[in-house]
Length: 299
Length: 299
Image (cartoon, rainbow over all chains, first blue to last red; front, side):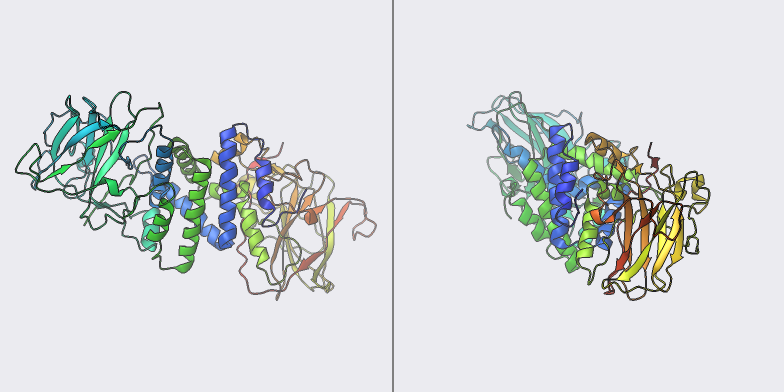
């Protein structure tokens, strides 16, 4: 038996976990304990502070319900969701367009729409056109790629946040043509705040963060033989484009709607975005979401 | 706006938290994010694994009730409670006897008993005597030091775990005499398992750990002008003396009951233990517990 002090406690814990049967669980918990202990030592965490942390984690757990995942929200605002996705992309055999967070508002069986259709049932502002081409990394068109899109409306709400989520709106599935070309109409979505009424919202508020995600359109593109692409297009003139609370924005995904003589629909402002899919290496996708149950509309 | 990858995400998160008003919260969260990200990078955490982790933390949160604190139990089995206490001791102006975990079974207003009394109402085995002296670091007796003791019975149960916690038993408060001497009778407590019926128990089981705490007697000693001493005496012949699941044992706290001609009560085996109190530096105590709601008796 050894005497445990603030440094010897760590190897003692690792030793007690060393017989873990699952080698990956052992590796993960070994690292978790080392980093957790290093954290406590670095800040010289006091018992009272750790009890505050325990209370916070307990409240995060209690805020988790079947329709709200406060721990994923915590993961999002601490950048861990984005980090884990980045690590996942790094391991890809071939990477196409930059990825982004899936978020919790993806729905299966969204309406199948013809190219050019508007995904918003009753737009209250002028629609815009999103168009472009889906190709492989070498620029070869991917014929009939499946393009699934979803977004908030012009007030910052997803369909799931309206009328109890009864209807499908602001979403649709398209099939690119034989040249990989796609286009659809929509309204410019409004950015929105993550839910600030729970413990994670309290943390974000105490950190003097605004809590907003910038305006964006979610896009999921798939085609046989290619890595599923989960990404989003972000509108560059949003006030929060440089400070997304969940760190989903990449420069290569920032777009601007403008007059565009090459748009397939004239008379509307348009965004052209060409997507590239990497070759599939039979990896699981299992991407992490952002902003679970983001039920607070922007302004 | 920068492009975020698996390394640049970390400074981006830190920057977004940099305006935190409370400097200590800023320092703690800055370190928490860095260590959490380093953990994810070190093990190349996958989205599926992180979702498993999120699910585990959610279950720990849901297992927390007004009478059970599963996050403290998690902290205990990962050695964080012991580490935070060790850091707290390191900051003490003067440290006496080695400390140990307070645990969740301390109760206020335990019976005030005369020296020599037995703290167990109906012992089913031969009692033993615990005796010794309370002094300062220089060996000067501390007159009338307050000695509070509590423990499990010979079956591994605290009073709070019997009859709904209705009665006080296996605990008592003593006042040392003018020479700092104390003695009381008790039964040798049985070690016990932490609760294995929750998510933390599942983790400990997956780690091939036995989950037991060795037999011990909790002791809290206080006197005006001295640092409150929260500690415990551990019985060296317990099978789990070298592998306490919550890392509370120190070599200097290990004892053995034996025939002792200098014991104040002859005919019973005895443990002599002399305690030292450090000078008070007006630090808060706020020690972290071990084994919250440890309701599973040993064998």
